[in-house]
Length: 397
Ligand SMILES: Cc1ncc(COP(=O)(O)O)c(C=O)c1O
Image 1 (cartoon, rainbow, N blue to C red):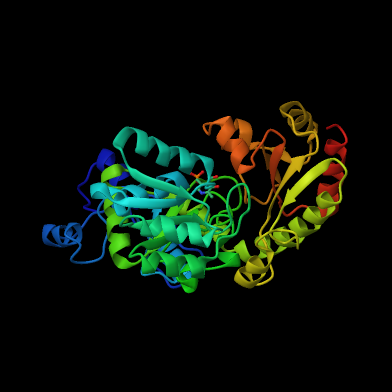
Image 2 (cartoon, rainbow, N blue to C red):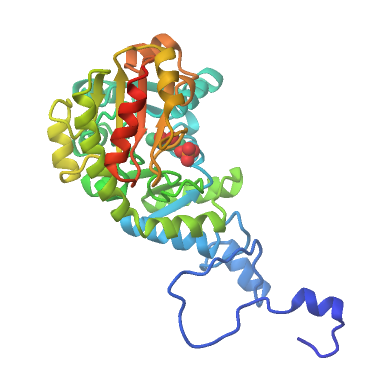
């Protein structure tokens, strides 16, 4: 800094960068800067032109978000990964940028996350988007749907929200590829701890990072991980549509990622014990959990996820009414009645008033998400306390 600078300039310009010194941080630094200065305009021009790696502006990429993207691409085994401000932003960017653009066609899971279904239905309504819904556990139906017309993307969830159907990723990849389509897997529920879909043949992996990957209920984010051309398109969507993930969020998600394996291991063990308990409970009519032998895709889940079945258990109250569901939810003390999952805290969601609110009641009923349907995301608390809490609340239904 020039000695001649006045105080008003000094306080603005001092300590812009961390002082140099030996020793590398063991935690990646949070670089919260929106703008990046370059020693020459030629260098800045080259970074803008993507001719050399670098940073120019927060919406184009930040060092901390890039660190998370590098980690996720490495974990998922893809060429690249681009992060967005939420899972929905990531899915919207992928669907519009790599599926429906220029009149492309998507075949999508009929019981995907309710808001994704609502988004695709809106696109169909407002933009005449070519979207067909299918049951991904019916492989013959998927093959017929993909073959019916040129298809760009087959879109499924590895474990579906909230019915917990399990998609056979290797078989679906084969069907998609035979029909000239890409297989995109929303792997939010399974998380990278249970399976890496790319290794099973999927082309693109999507996560709501808000859920298991962060796991602490304090950040929203999403990612699209895939081949280089998809990553390039996603980068462009982030720049022009503005849904890129800011650095502080990325820093927190990277911290959450460190404990993913430990958290999910505990959650899977507790969820299995809870599912078994609920399956024998007089007040519960039905339990959806891939770890139960009665689950229609139990064997597939065992094979695909290596003996773990995820931390979410869905169940239907014997009193299959809205009143009973409200009484159950209002009785909860330890478990939050909240609209999320994958956190280290246990949470119960009531789809009829939240994720599936926009889905017509008849369609909800057809899918099996009726008025007594509840979704429990099991946290890392002691499972005995969770079971005692569930018994107490069920007694009131
Ligand atoms: C399977 C699945 N995908 C995507 C999303 C959307 O993610 P976000 O809430 O981060 O936008 C959710 C949200 O619950 C989800 O459950």
